[in-house]
Image 1: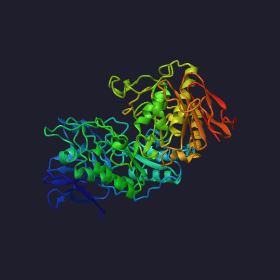
Image 2 (image 1 turned 45 degrees about the vertical axis):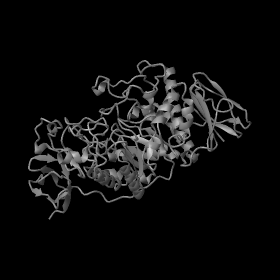
Image 3 (image 1 turned 90 degrees about the vertical axis):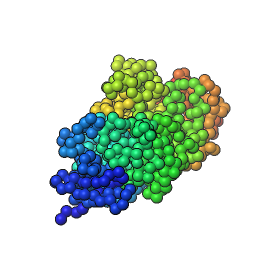
Image 4 (image 1 turned 60 degrees about the horizontal axis):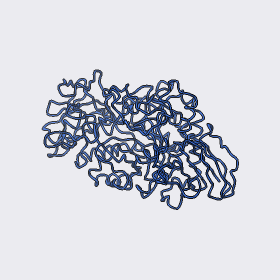
Length: 595
């Protein structure tokens, strides 16, 4: 006799719920009393689909795995389509892997944001693009100095939807089957997490629980809409969906059934050993502040780090406006202010002074601030210094999608066609400058896979549907930008040697700001700033002319890094121990002195 797998689904409006198994059996689920779950059992390993009131096939929203029959079509599930149960997605009754503990890194947090498929898709191996293939990349990340691998969404999404990033989930708590080489995606992800833990690398997941792939009224009906749309989505009296996620719908954070579905998914994913979750558009969930705090309580109990993207299409809750200070937050102000500084905008130095100190205007602790200048959504770091304008024609929207105001600068030449060597040299220097600003500021630094080797998307700043070489990690670039990768490795080592940059204590009193002489120049036309912290003296000059700086802190200072030098080899040499010693910093350059 085959072992049994429990099926449990909340369908408060249904009068009958059946689980139709692929072997032809039909299991009638039972509901003990109104507004409780319908429950039943199917054999372990079976593929099944739920059928509501003898008519509508539904994918189990608590599925542990999803299988797509040949002939699956997203359009068939849309209004006017003809739903065929034979080609409808199936839940797989696969037991979840044995629970694994979280294992927080013993090293300073340095976050590496990557796509699970794109990280290895261009590797010459049969399992390229899978969790198993990612095992082989972990040693390189450890050598680079990365201590957190943050994966873009890995929950199951519709392969017929054309969304490479995976931000349109079908089932919150199932792992995307197409990322598995073994046919058991959850187990394969858990094994990858184990391998990361062996190298003292945490694994965080970017999780989307604010909306689903069902979109608006014109989208497909797979799960929640068929079960009880007003129990799960924010719907007005006229039946219109609130669309603060920009995807057609948002989950109702005030609904107990929606909250339970989310918490069940979080528990399940945490059981794989996941060390942290970055919540996409967390402001959607913050419509119920108590729910955000309940997730915070859960995170404390499970030993899981929580990170918010503290905005949605309607609200911007960065800093104290977000309802739980235990969460870290993606710091959009750091991104914008540092981008402005990099391209030499006037009036941003006073803001830069706050960002490099851990944004005390926004956070009580610097460790609440996840500092970045690039993320998956937007230009790569190379493209940030190579394009003034987005080039998104390949996405199919006539270059109207993606942000149009990126605070980027092409270094004097748009794109790579015929680019002069002098411009390429400036671009590489600007990338090194960007890494210095991210990694030598107080807080939690983050950069995107491939930024350390000059990965380009050809100016595409919204490559959400580019499951091709546009988005995949380019190992040819890695061989071309060896010096850049060495520089980033050296910079991470330098940060690790000064752990105060990753301290939870406020930076006030720990970091002192300077100008070319005397205090910092916070005037509108200023483009430079220097700071001293824990034996580091950093001088950043984003002016297009060299600037002479006076060293204002006594010490036996040596030159540790200079972004005008292509190699990461310590440039060495004593600058001098006399206060008042002068150092010339080149145009658009940063030097780092160390005692």
